[in-house]
Length: 120
Length: 113
Image 1: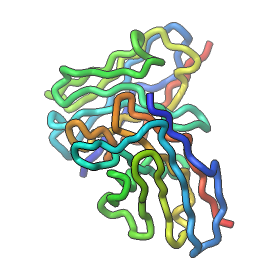
Image 2: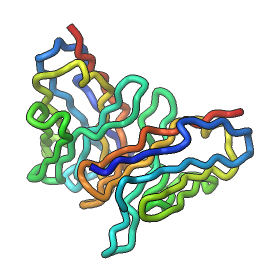
Image 3: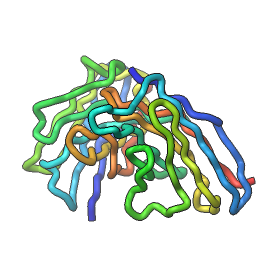
């Protein structure tokens, strides 16, 4: 079945880096754009980044621009986000989510999420 | 950025009764070239990721019960649960996908009265 599984979360000190992965299965990953979305404890949903199906176009929220890098490896059916210069406010559950079709950026499939805690 | 607001913040409804959630966007999300509203609704239960319920403001995702319906256009939208069931207890979010950054409303918590 269609599935997204995030990994790579954990506890990290402010200023350090972390890379999250999202393994896709059950669909042709290379045909779909992908999002990262985060949710802070007890709070709502915040969009983080979007990458096109082929990786050529990338978009970022202002809150992470210059610090986070979204990428993908279509040969491995895997989405990534490299998170540098982490701050306490980056503490959240990070979800990867599939874009339903090109240019229509709502999310029809979500992973279960991976938790990132930034604390000294 | 398009700012999404929702009302109420929370509501409690008796089983079998109607629940209505409102969502407002700071600018129109109606794309004139195709006459579609770029507005989706998600349901999130505790400990779970969001689940897509409605897209194009009123199209139910496959498998979503027909007690869920979406309406509205332009800047004002509504999610209605026609007959609340116990399994509908959740937080509901609207999202605009008219432009990047996509943005979500703050959520509305629905509980049983």
